[in-house]
Amino acid sequence: MEATTNRLLRNAPDFARLFNHFYGSRVASKFEQLLTDHLVIAADLVNAAKAGNSQAAAVAEKRWYTNADEIVHFLNCINPYWTSKHMREMWYEHLALTKAEAVARLNKDFEEDIAIFDKIEKQALMMADSFSNGIIRQFCL
Image (cartoon, rainbow, N blue to C red; front, side, top):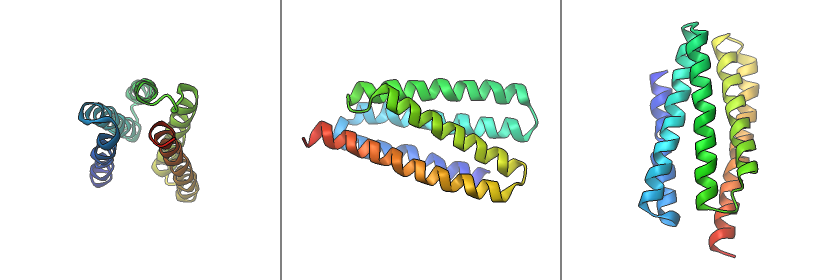
């Protein structure tokens, strides 16, 4: 769990470095914090579920969706081509898939875990395309 969490936490500064090129350090830093929060909350949710603490898991899941809404709002404010509706759909799908994968793994249903991971990979690539398309439209067209 620790190794996975540490690896995932590297995503936030990686995104920040990219965002810095287009939006400057203040925006990059804010996005890095929002994404770090997203990843930490996910770890809290998994840890609560793993411990069988359904109340703590429910609280973490609510915080996770609130954080997703904050990310969506932030992204739409910096790039009008990242519409709130589309971004929210993507982030919510990401959360649902990630939760389903964690549940499958905790239940030791490794075939389902792998199947969901494949969906997550495809969905992440679609999210990357949406980010790229928004940047292209904002800065190159």
